[in-house]
Amino acid sequence: MQVTESIVLDALSKLKDPNTGQDWVTSKSIKNVQILGAHVSLDLALGYPAKSQWPQFQALITQALTALEGVAEVTVGVSTQVLAHAATRGVQLLPHVKNIVAVASGKGGVGKSTTAVNLALALASEGATVGLLDADIYGPSQPMMMGVNARPQSEDGKTMEPLENYGVQVMSIGFLVSPDEAMIWRGPMATQALEQLLRQTLWRELDYLIVDMPPGTGDIQLTLSQRVPMTGAVIVTTPQDIALLDAKKGIKMFDKVGVPILGLVENMAVHICSQCGHSEHIFGVDGGRNMAQQLEIDYLGALPLDIKIRLQADSGKPTVVADPSGEVAQIYQAMARQVAIKIAAKARDFSSVFPSIKISKET
Image 1 (cartoon, rainbow, N blue to C red):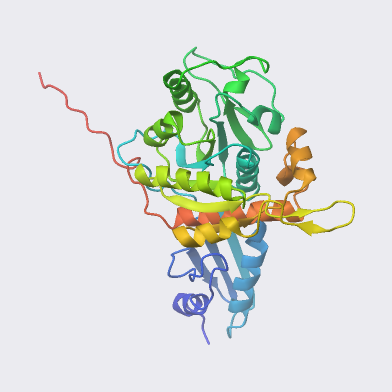
Image 2: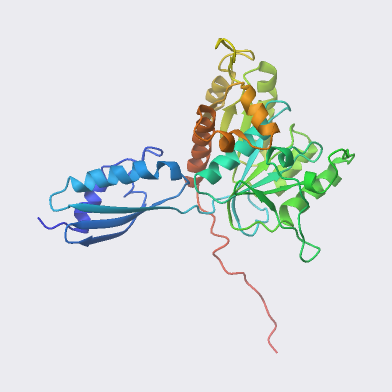
């Protein structure tokens, strides 16, 4: 039997993407099908980063096609093609930045910054081009967590080059002031400084910009949510009732300004004693999971209260790079993948495709 492209596509239409549940033919992820005798080659173009899963996907496709009569050899190329998706309406988009994701919490102390940096690193490890903006003017922590201690360079005196480590571009007010200097600024000054950090940084072709938001739901957070073209937000909370109350306020704030919630992360869900292995739910059980169900938002998963997470972040080598094959790093990667998949399912943004219209006066 002679193998044709329609036979190949029919066989592949029966395969489901393990992450999305869709088949790769319907989602138009199968590209460049070539048939030369008994050899079939094709490309799998994914809309989300999942480099660690590429061998699994290649094996699935190879197994399905070699089962066909007349197919002896299969070559599968895999690539990531992250597109720009719909962001906050009426807000000026950032050049060279496809998607902006806010990582927020209603209160401080729930591990928001640690979650933000590990999500950024997880996306980068899966093959995406990622930036990290430390938007906490009063308590910038990303310079320490990312192990970066330098000042941004400026070629023209107006814009700044982001610093980089572990494959992630980083910008923070912490790069511009002394670590011991207190930022005694009122809300409008802090907001203006953040906008400058965001828009005057020369981000280099980012698939995702992760914004580590300041804690709370005050004027700075609200203004940022209205002025930054966000694709969506991730909420970080602990299972504790007090943290859940504040997290709910954060969710309502994003809802009012039209920023969709991409999911909820339940941090410090369980403590496991490093000495005896005893597990204890210090802050309560399943508080984040239950709230996500009540508010009908995606539950991205739970992270343990683990001393290694804190030690690794404080040392400038967060968990995803310090122990990439460890259980906690795998949880961060699964969360990051879910966020990217949720973004890929959103409507595309075509504003960068349309040419700008200029009106000139004829002479």
